[in-house]
Structures are given as C-alpha cells and as structure tokens.
Image (cartoon, rainbow, N blue to C red; front, side, top):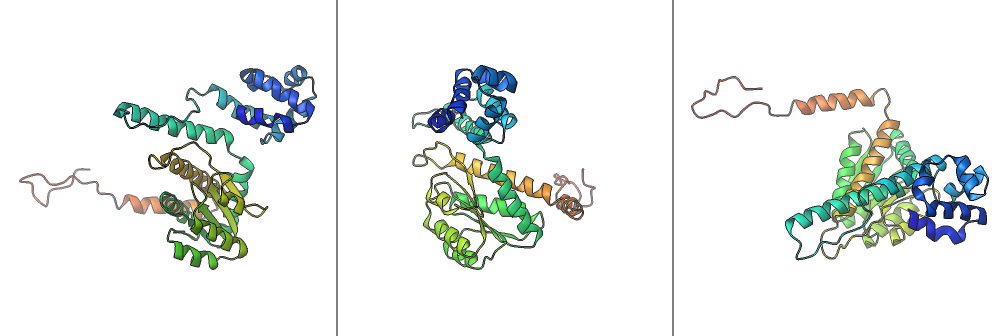
Length: 302
C-alpha cells in the first residue's frame, strides 16, 4: 500500500503530495490522527486530505485509515517466501502458510470496493431477473469455477460452471444482455478464456474477470459494463502449483456469494436455505457401526 502511494506522488497535485509525504513519514500516526491535525501538519485544508485518499483509490478518509491500520499493524509480513528444494517439512509448512496469509491480508488492503460493489450489483440483477450466470475457468481455475457454481446455485439463481474449451465457446455464444460471464484465470492469458470474454462482450453480457491486473484478460473487461476484480500476488507457478492464487480466487468468490446472498435475502430465500440444510442433515449417518457379535436389530447409538 505504501509503495503504491509512494509511486503515485508525482501524479498528485502539490497539496496532496504534502499529505502523501506526511503519511510516508509516519504511517502509524497518520492512521490514528484526526483529519484536522492531519490537515494542519500537511499545511492543507481538511477537504484536501479527503481528496488525497480518493486520489489514491479509496472511498474516503475512513476507508483509507482502516486499510492503512491493517497494513502497518499486521504481524505477518507482506513478503512472499519462495519454497526451495532443500526446505525441510517445517520450513515448507511455515512458508506456505505465511504466503497464504500474507496474500489474503494484501488483498484485503488493496481490494477495490467499488469494483466489488459493481460485480455484486450485476450478479444480483442477473439472479433476480432469472438471467444466466456462467462461471468459466480452466485447470485450477476450473475448480474455482465449480466451487462458485456450487455456492450460487444454492441461492436459487441459474448458474453453471464450464471448463471445457469447446463448451465454453458454445455457452458464451448463447449469452444475452443481462447475463453474467464470470471468468476466472490466474495468468489471464488462456486463449480459451480470452475467446470467451470476447464472445460474451459481443453478445452484450456483463463480463466479470477475476485475474491479474495488467493481463490480457484484464484488458478485455475495459468499459463501464464490465468489471475487473484484480488478484495480484507474487508466486512462482513454475516451481509448484499456484496455491495462493487459488485461495485468493476462492476468497473473492466467497465475497461475491456473501454480497449476493445478502441482497437476495427475500422472503423466500432464507426458508429455502433452512429447508435445504434440514434435508442435508437427514442424509448424515449418525449411527455407530455394529460391533462383533452385535445384533442387526440393536438400536443405533446417537
């Protein structure tokens, strides 16, 4: 977060640059001081402090200070630790967990709330109008697409997950305005998924891309109708399976699912979910397996 702000200083107006330099000089104090004192120390007006927060991508001072506090106070470093061939099991455990936790915290502080809100609104609109919500992914991302479809179909919306390249093209061709195409890709460079994004855009569907910013797929979702949910992280995918990206993508799917569920929580949804859980509980095996010499007519142990 601080590195991004430091890099953005030359593009800021002179007054906002003074706010940025005050922030970089003492981030911890900046996160706790009231706006009046921040303005006084920066020699700017209070509205300028708020404008600075919005200029660097946050909703306002409160949102900025919340993300800043998380960034400077977390005990887990925002550093990716590569796994080496000679690492012992204990080293691998620590590195894998640290990488996952650091990536999640980094995403929490960098997530674009406006983009998430736009994605949720598009999905809610499609779900409430009975439109199609299609999840596309290949490889590891295909698994995430299946998880997303599993979560969304429980909300009573029309959804499907497609991971076969040919079926993806056919599915995207049948999209229409009001439908949503959620495309999940770590690299954002899969030709199959780029073709899907292009077809979905031409059919008038809303494209929501969960991928790395700056990737070819990210460039496919430019425009007010489409949404980029950027998931950036350092990961050596050439050495081992991209575990962190999958966790980030699953997290983003959970955020979208929660947002959609809250907006769709009409009178019929909650009773439906309660009935679904009740029916699932009836499928659980709660009896103990009969022991040697026991009768088949013996009562089960709860």
